[in-house]
Structures are given as structure tokens and as C-alpha cells.
Image 1 (tube, rainbow, N blue to C red):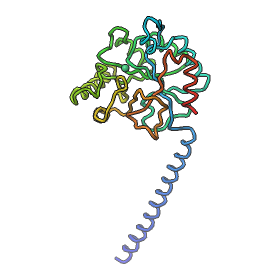
Image 2 (cartoon, helix red, strand yellow; image 1 turned 60 degrees about the vertical axis):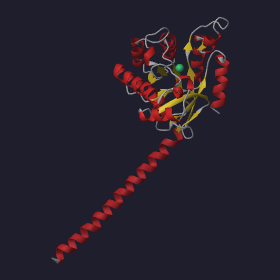
Image 3 (tube, rainbow, N blue to C red; image 1 turned 30 degrees about the horizontal axis):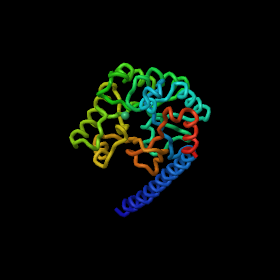
Image 4 (tube, rainbow, N blue to C red; image 1 turned 30 degrees about the vertical axis):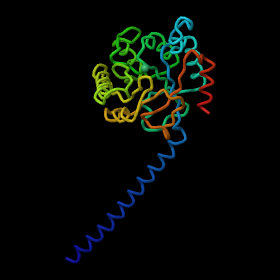
Length: 264
Ligand SMILES: [Zn+2]
């Protein structure tokens, strides 16, 4: 009996020591991995906001002019990003709070047709990706992408996010309507195109606490406003990321200037 007791004690001591060694090794690996990843990532990233990529007469349609970028200027902007060594990523890539250095998100609002016909070929020329916020109730409507064009964009690696069903001023809606706009647009995009949608763009940048809570409840992980600035994933809330608006008033030079300021 005494012999068995001694063996049991010996086993406990040996076993405990082995466990301690294993735990020590695992801790060391975790620390090494963390320090190895840190130098190549950061938390700040510009999220560019575009609408139309088309030619508009400023005198005939001043509002449309301010919502658009001329295709030649857009191409020059993409060339600048390429020459400067930028990497384009999706909004969904921001969820873990770290992004590669010199990363940028090119976000397009409203699911417009000229994204597919004009912007996408230019993006592909430079090997870039982008993120398009689709208003599900406007798919196939005047100036908006059709189902097929959205499918083509997805095939080209474009991220699709929700921009609600009807582009309503969300803070002015009832709780039931807000929920409907957020949940049904997400479900529609996921079922129709076989996606997982985690990103959201607030229509006209309008939000309040109730809208942000409804976004969380609907399962969105990341969302952007129209507030101006570079996004800092360590400081900004993931559902309230600011963006850098670019249109014809910026042109090529304004784009470069804004990027140089935010990327300091
Ligand atoms: Zn919009």
C-alpha cells in the first residue's frame, strides 16, 4: 500500500512539472507572435468616400457635379495610390482593429451603375479592390447597378455593404422601420448574392444612438459615416468610422493634398 502511495505522489509531481513546462512554452509562443506582427500593422486608415464616377456639367447640374468625380481625375488618383505603394482593402478587413501599413479603403455609396461601367475597369487596371454600399430597393433602378452588375462586381472581388432598402433618414424613423431597413437589406444581399454582409454605410451619414444599437442587433460589425477624417481603429467606434470625401471639387490635386494631410 505504501509503495502505491509513493508511486502516486511521484506521478503527481512529475505530471505537474510537465504541465508547467507546457504552459511556459505556450506563453512564449504567444508573446513572440505578437511582437512579430506589430511592426507591419497600424490602426489608422483613410476610408475614401466616392459617389458617381462620370462626366457632369457643373453649370447644368451643380449638385450632381459635387457628387461626382471625372473619370480622368479618378484614374489619376488611382495611379497616385499605386505609385505611392498603397494597398486597397475592404471595410470587413478593419474588424480586428489592425490594418497593413499604407492600406486604404475605397468606398462607393449608393450602388451606382457607373461604379461597374467606369470605376471598376480603372480599379482593375491598377489591381485595386473597393467597397460598394448598395441600396437594395434601388437595384436595377435608373443609374443604379442591376443584379448582374452587382454579381460581376462581386466576381471581381468587390465588397458589398448595405446602404438600407430605401436610403431613408434613419434617426427620423420608428424603431420597427429602422430594424426593417437594416435587417431586410442585409438578408436580401446575403441571400441574393451568397454573401456574408458585415459592413454598413449610413444613408446621408445620419445616425443616432438608437440606429447604432439597431445596427449591432442586426449583426453589423463595421460602419462608416460622412464625418470627415482618417479612421483610427484604436480610437473611433467600429460602427462610427469617419471618411474622407472626394469629388470634383477636389479633383486630382485636392485628393493628393487630403491624403498627404491625413496620412501624416
Ligand atoms: Zn447614399
